[in-house]
Each structure stands twice: as structure tokens, then as C-alpha cells.
Image (tube, rainbow, N blue to C red; front, side):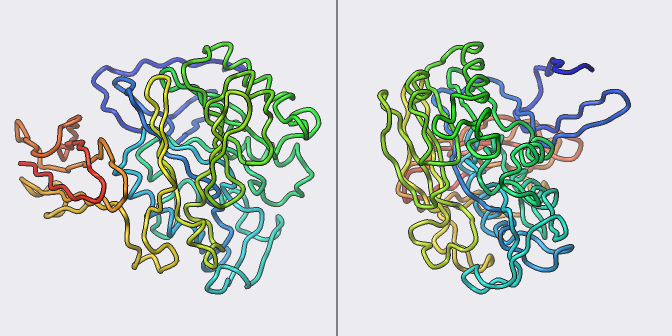
Length: 409
């Protein structure tokens, strides 16, 4: 397979809607990209996505450098439970995926202890990103989301190099994370992913006008090829480095960002463009100011050429408490073990948020060999048959500050 080759694959029509691994075999090599292909029966209108930022996975480390794990995974794991009930079409993470140092033996606020960095001090970049994707110590990483996750580079997303070594830190991202700059579409929505830190500050990301360099050319080309669509979203890390010439020319509707850890929104440029950040969902070291910064995400709803967005939502009531004591603001529990052994079951959804949540997802794992399962108080979205179980995906609307019981038999 040559450079810049394009591979096209046909998906069988009966394939369930799900996230799948991508396996590419070429010239004797097998490359695996986990949970990287989402099969859709159709695009949804309206559709929803979730924005989070600044997870800083591995900023604080629990245990030894060889057998420990990123402290931030404890909150991320619980947020994933909430997100999978909301069931967005995709998730965007605007930078500071990992951290360029590691803090061992931190105090109760996530500070103090011993700070290490450099190639002689593991965990190295590979382990940090592995924690982000795969999780560790029984906690989920982003592979735990039941939606595609699109990540953007931030100013802490490298390890071992000096921040001035732009070619090296860009190559490290490319090797471990893929493209730094890219675009993708969801029906008539265009999403642009921007690198506003790792690349060369002269040719790639000119300091004063960051989209006038090479990455701007890449994203202009994407929009020229796909068309402008009806809604244009741009995702970058910094909130205070906005190229208004680019966003005006391309009529960007939403500019997602982070870097500052407090939620904020404002309008910039001539369109005007909504510049918005969500706060941080799981970063360590936020204990002293947690009420203003920690545990936050936002939900965006795109409906043709219009959009709405939620206030910053805190996924749990008490993000500073130990993992076992976290109280989630959206829960799903089952009357019987949801393991494929019960011929009937009952799910209880509870929404403590102040907003309605449409199309919440419940996945029932049921015994095989029953012809027709029936669900009350929800609609069956799809039924998946495998060798051992019948999987029934149901969806239901959940009003603010309410609970709902969904039964299957």
C-alpha cells in the first residue's frame, strides 16, 4: 500500500450500530485501531455531542512508576457511565489529553509530592496515552465510551522533550495519537480539529494568526472538498488564541476550547461565533477550587442549521470524594443482574440534572431463544443476536429531575 492510499470498505447492511475495531493488514504487518469505526444506519436529526476538555491524564500518579495508574481515571471512569446513558453521537476533547510531567505521592489536594519528567522517568508518553485510551487498575479510559471520541492537542500533550522541540513533539503525537489537524462530517455538520500548540510556530501555526499557516490550508481544503455544510464547529485547545480572520471567512458557528479550567462562553468575530469551554471533567489538582472547575461537561444539540447547548453540567455531586463515594447525577440500575440469565428485567433511570435528556440508552443483555422481547416505557432501537445472548438496545426520553422505570420481558 503506497503513501496516501485510500482504502474503501463495504459494511454489510445487517451490521448493528456499534463501535468496531479497525484491523489493517499490509505487507506482512497487522495494525489495530480499537473502537475507531462507528457504523450508523442513518444520520440523526437532531443529533447531540458532548464536549469535555483538559483531562490531564497522568498528571497525578497512584502507585509505582511501573505498576501505577493515572489518578484522573477515577473520575473519568464514572463520567463514562453518565455519558453512555446520554448516548451522544460523538465526543470532542479539546486538549491537554495527558500531562508533560508526573506527580507522585501528591497530597490530598493533588499537589506536593515528587514531580518527575524526562525520558529517564516513567511513565513515558506511551503509558500515559495508554491510560487515556485503555484505562488502568480496573478504571475505564476513553475506549469505555459508547461513542467515537475525537481528541485535539493541547500545550501539555507531550512527554520527554522540551516544549520548544516542535518537530519532535509533533512527531510523538502523530505516532501515538494520529493526525494533529483534521476534519470530519456528521451529515451537514462540519467539525475542524486544530493544533494550536505542538506544531512549528512559524510555518505550521504562525503565532499571531494561527490558521494562516499549513494547518489552515489543510482545513480550508477539507471545507472546499466536503462543502461548507450547515453548521461548522472548530475545536482547539486555547480560548485566548483565536484567528478571527479564519473563523469569519469560514463562518464558524461554534468554537470549542479549554486551557482555562473554568466554564465560560462569549461571542467573537463577525458571524458571531460562539466561543465556549466546559470546565474540566477529571483533572487532578482542582480540589481547592472544585466548585468552579471540576466534573463539568456540556451537551450540544445540532438541528439542521441551528444549535443549542447546555449549561456546564457536573456529572456527579461530589467530585472531590473517593471513587467509591461518588454520587452520579444520572444513573441506570437494574432489578436483576444484567448478564443474560434473567428472562425479564427492570431498569431504573434517574436524572438529577436540571435539563431534559432525550433518547437515553438502556442496553439489556437477555437470554437467547426467545422470539420477541417487549419493552415498556421505551422504544427498541435495535436487537443484536450473538452466540450467547440477545442484546436489546432501548431508548427513552427522561425529563429533568425525574426517574423512569423501563421493563423488558
